[in-house]
Image 1 (cartoon, one colour):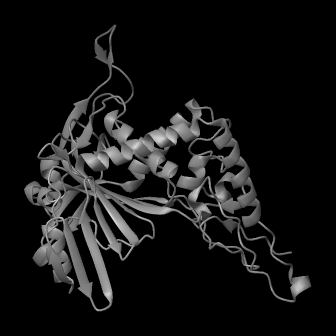
Image 2 (image 1 turned 30 degrees about the vertical axis):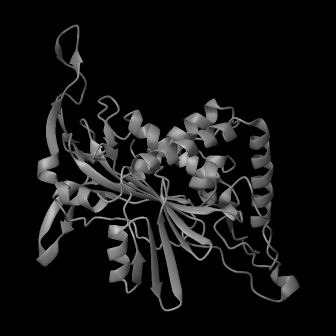
Image 3 (image 1 turned 60 degrees about the vertical axis):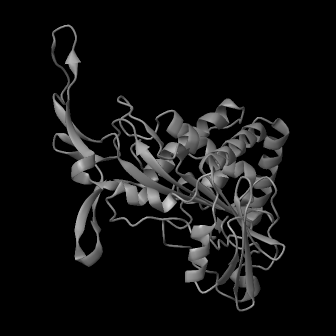
Length: 404
């Protein structure tokens, strides 16, 4: 008898049999009014950190890679893998979830597949012995340092000392480790797909507190530190929010081969809360073929039958088509305030017993709908689909194998 194929929470809103999956209101996995959010930032190392990549004989090494530049040039850069951030973030949200009263055991790698964090960050039913999978809706990009590896990574000797005998103790003895030094910069980008406000807040809590509490490092006994790089005393941070997942204004990404931090900062320079300006937006839209008119506070861009209106509001940039809002862009301290507000909303929701009970019931019903059995071949005359042979199908990509 053929095995039943596992359901996937990232599937369309209808099952293969044609019946509609239930709408959700506590989780964005199938909610009608979700948002897509992209968080862009430049982070600066303030002390020694290490993004571990294993041990080479007696040296603990940090991850690096060769980056291709213009004209076939190459350089080596330090790497901050997205899985390294994801694993730390998930643990941070787990801690808050447990402190605020969620009942049940859930930790990496023994995920419960039932709590709000599992349904946001994903889980793999195969490894958790469940009948369903859920893909992560928080996607982390891998960051490449601005500065070259030879400039931003140093080796330091470490040893364990026996205080009584004043000798080096332990089988490891003296060893070396590579650390990323203070002043190194990492552009970081995170996409939150089809999320509700509390789910934005869950990510915001981890992102802000892992920076605030110096958690982003594999060297737990020698915490370094990370902060937002600044431009005119404003954090280099941009939050783009769209109700449809369509962003007329592109994320300000920088080339991986760029080694001049001043040029990297300039990419974000026009986005600071003290003086929101549409000058750069105007030139960008004109280069894309739009006829643009207006002033520094409001632009109208036309191309064929398409008309976009871009307005510089008090706290954000607003892009709309007619009366339909396409996106908002928060920048600098306003973007930081946006994330902090969502962080507080998440904590309030998670601490509410009624909210927790509602989510438990909802994800239980949704899971049952996903894993609904397909008609047997005896009743339909058709051959049942074979189960997936890909062990990573629906994997949460949550950094459970990271070394943090």
